[in-house]
Length: 327
Image (cartoon, rainbow, N blue to C red; front, side, top):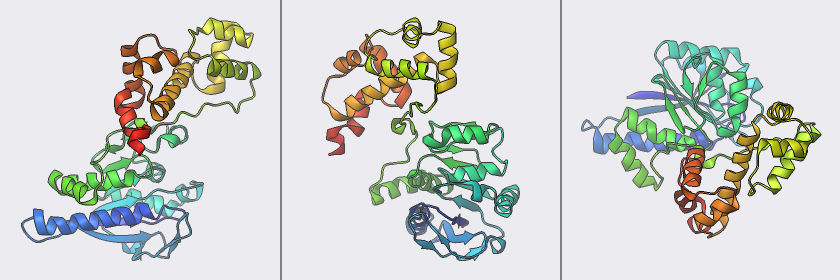
């Protein structure tokens, strides 16, 4: 039986503790009655905080721990939940960071979800190794932890002694994954059926929402960005865009990259894929029509580019996120 210590933190998401607690409690009881053949549970669950006192979640709810970290000496697994807001206070808590690092060095497996991965990375244990976090936190994560190999497209990354999970509700995926890894795939499948939740998702890419940077002060580049948005369905070249900005091609490409973080052609592709996603979500237009409305000439090439960007074919994307799928 493995002991899991759920590390409750200020401003954490309560359901990212109680949800996995429920799922893994059920996993443990199902393991005992249906899968182990020995009547023994799979997990022993406990909730800890840094000082043993209750913490307040971002929604105002209180989490009352069983103990503090000093009294939780040998957990097999530490589970770091989703955290909202400014992470500075949490990642600068040296005693907490030291406790996680020390426990891992003595054999404890670290599991972290979403922004909780920042705390795992603060220990230095992920340097030179792969991890994931919420796609919308990826730029901040890479800036703060450049030594970590970030796989933002992945929902779960398992490095053996450290398992990280992506977006907010990825605690569900991680819980199912843990049931499969520490129990069996049959147990994970049984939980999925019992709880009416999909099997653990592999990718975050279908959920990506590109944020187009227009908060910079380069008026020439802003002019080009607005023109690109209005004319994305037309054939566009860097030369044409540079002309609209009133700049030479090389100067335009350099300033565009500096202002937006992307090359002009990358930015154009993000615009077009974003428009295609909107059309697939909200209309019944055939993929061939959407291809031309978003500036692509060949439907098969569009399908390849769309799948590369989202992880799903246009048809699969519409089935998952379109009006009929949502209804």
